[in-house]
Image (cartoon, rainbow, N blue to C red; front, side, top):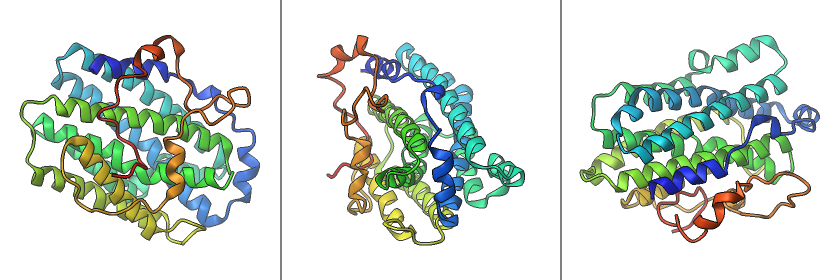
Length: 304
């Protein structure tokens, strides 16, 4: 089972140069100030977050886990996170022309309180002496909950037909992070000593509260089809989905307010000859995996 996740990661390999940003520059200028503010904060968080995930893998999880297949997956995940970091840096360099604003966003942990709170929560877990099971759940929250609002915001742009380069990179990266979260849930299911429901709910609730604060501060104005109230509900929906994937009861029992988030889980809807689809994968290992790997799949839009 663990090896299958590594093979899925290999199938999904890509490089940042594959993302065409040529149409994005003109469309960025057509966005409202509120939209630019929100997307800028989203990219700033993404740019900071991958370094934190990398630090956790290198400093903790590769030392915690001795199973060769799991260590192989973490090694591949680190390579994928480096590509994500490169992609987010390229996006910020492309869109943000003001040097002071660019510096502020590239140093978001020091300059933007709602991003600093997310970073501190994750860094505290890296430095924590608690059980591996707790830290595994916490970083499933980082990749499953802390990223959810930001991914959703960019898919909202895709719904409007805006920023094709940004939205395509979002397809690729959200797919990767979904795989990483799937792996955390799978590995957790194999632990002999798991956590009590109350502890897991507590960890997840902390992450939901912090992500909700981020959304409310980064999205101060209601946009068309998007506002902080709906986004807060969506974050709780995703948190419940993560809890179920970890083998626990839901906490919030809310519905998905964004039906257009089906974009995340659609497969094979884009003409390959028009553009490399976000569902692209290396064919050499795909055929052996089509019938397997259906358990422990964490999605951002699925009903219960």
